[in-house]
Amino acid sequence: MTENKKPDNVVFNTETQKYDASLKPYGTSVGAPIIIPTDTVAWKNRSINKINHKVSAKYLELKSEYENMIQEFEYNKLIFNAKFSFEPIIGEVYHLYQRENNESFLSLISPEQCNFKSIGSFYLNAGQIWEKI
Image (cartoon, rainbow, N blue to C red; front, side, top):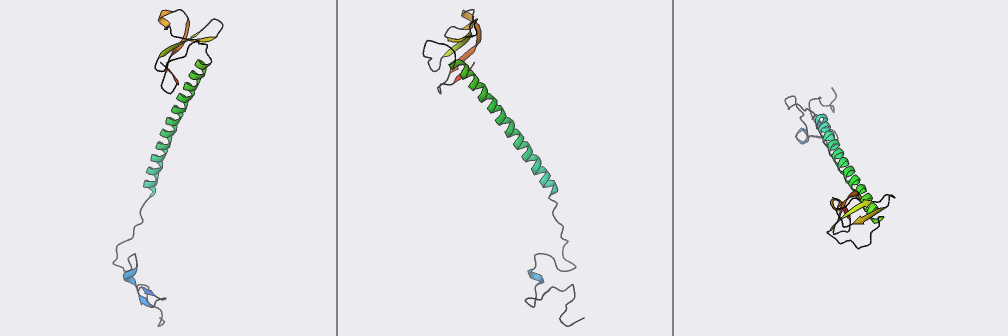
């Protein structure tokens, strides 16, 4: 053995020319505890599963909200294209009917009080958006 070479079980820093076993973040002697790497595969799989469920639930929620918005748009389009000769009052319920010539009209008369073909009853909310009842 050469005079500069230290044995493998001795921790000697050749740059600083000091013994620095106590400064190492890991065990340096035969009696030191075993370093066992942490298994992160299970944690990753659980996290991936959680995020997939979260994203899927959010997607279904947004899809449902979008479908409701489109349906609300269609109802409002249908009513605004209908014939009526009065100004609807916010908070009141109105009824949409269809004539024989497929022309729609809005009325105050409920379906029980007339023989027109009813499309549905609608409520005008504070945002002036028609909601189907």
